[in-house]
Image 1 (cartoon, rainbow, N blue to C red):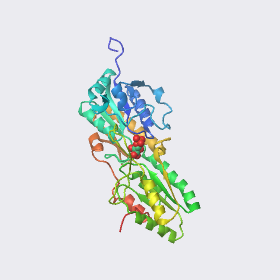
Image 2: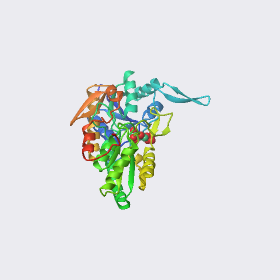
Image 3: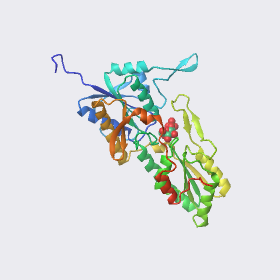
Image 4: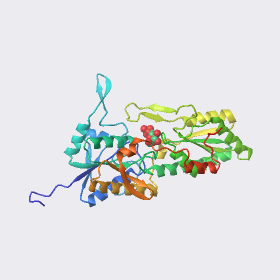
Length: 369
Ligand code: F6P
């Protein structure tokens, strides 16, 4: 008390941006629980940067976040189309883009938000970095099933997507083996092949096609024939949505002009499956795993990582280390400038130990002469 009524508490804002991802709720829970016990109030911003632009925020109490650990998605809602620095407005029937960041910042001030925790992937964190350059006190938390953010070894959500993709490969083995078929599983990952590579390794795929290693279809055909020659009449192929043939292009499913990252990949699985069936005459089926990889309850690994990230983000706020993002390096939670995380995508090095391990157990990447 200061003689003029109770002192106002310091307020932390939290938002989730970009595609949803298992573990978002676990981060929100960790932020709220640890911030409240450190004496802060927490305000949740609805639907990512859309809610910040439209001034939609609500107080989050501890009771609002209990039971959230196992829940997929985000109780705050999210958007991968809204950017306060490039917000669409209709002018004479045409869509134009305006910088509405000053209004968004004023909305934070109106709610007394002193620091903003932004949970997102590279698109969302790039916006967070730009807000930080305008003076907003921002802390980042790295999220994406694609695991393609620099400055951290792992993003939360990746492990859950990996478990889903691995289980899909396990299940596809039954039909592949029983019907002597080729089964092609297309997984997400954008321009990085982490989900395909690690699920392929864990799920015993015979061929793994990733964006970082351009493939030749006849090398995949060779692998299928080699397996048949020693009595294995089925083959399992995992293909990342961003994989492309040598000299060819990634397959674009859709362009979303309103999104900061407008390209939506998808369709390479169908292309590969059709070519393989034609060239090998082996009955082939294609399965696109799609958003199943983003749904469901986070794995224990992701729940723990999300909890470590959420509590570490609040510590960064307390230590006034703004413009930083929490990160995992080895076994330790550290922090790094958000700028470092969003500068370049973290892709699979084609000479990495994981790729070499896969090759050592006979996996083909569809490359070579
Ligand atoms: O970044 C996550 C991700 O799921 C990518 O793997 C995928 O390419 C993209 O988002 C799909 O976006 P949307 O949900 O807009 O179709």
